Image 1: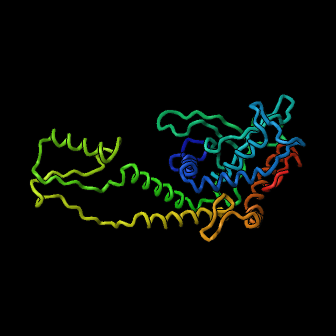
Image 2 (image 1 turned 120 degrees about the vertical axis):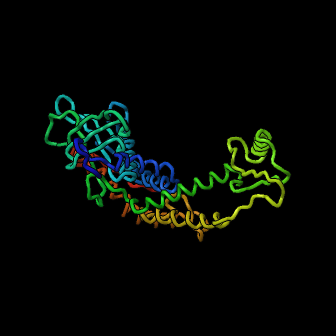
Image 3 (image 1 turned 30 degrees about the horizontal axis):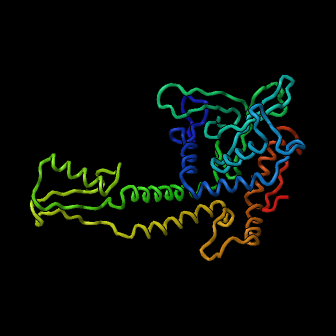
Length: 331
């Protein structure tokens, strides 16, 4: 978080794009995405009742309360906070609510004013944004305002996601995936050398030979992945000294396992909650799931439900929203 001279809002990240970084990790890290998506499903529960109606529409776009809750829970888990836009009618009554993409909202130091922009990433020119005041249930004259909800561990202007301690683990998992993708893309021949020890051909002949080799062994789009060496004789052939080891696959497998464990730890979750079984498990067990979910629901899911319910009730009045807890058996 950084106060920039001449700017009313607090910059989020050195380039004001930290939310985009977090969103990118969520999109690229399969373990993180699985945990967050699964937790959001648990937060939605079996049913959401709003003002006595099951899954009621809450705005002119036709979005239901379930859709708004789902998006708020997702932002809360990804970014550590979420925003809801509150719209009043001419009589001053709250008529609509909208989820606002947390990656597109910035705020001032006191969280009293909010700034929405479709793009904060412009390097040049002026960033266009819309200014909204903080929601005040007593002020019925403001037609549009915003309410912000942050995680309890937040200490600054913006929220802190519960997985902040595992950001490096998420980064490592994405890098491991990139490594394996490059290995496959290069047909596992990225460090191969082909020696031609019968003299040096002309530059044109070298290009023809290189094109033929890459087309046959490296595949389309992978030209240049094999090192070709043209030598006067075998005595003059190219040699390569490997500084690393050949056990990358084993090392990365252990590292991937460690990063997954760290991500699950940060959410206080167990793999079985998201359809994954442990190494010692023989398969999915309903009893084991229910026991594990009971603790996860009490320590992680319900606090998020309470945050969202308190927010909606603050807007529409106590008792406006209720969420039926998740269960495997839906009547």
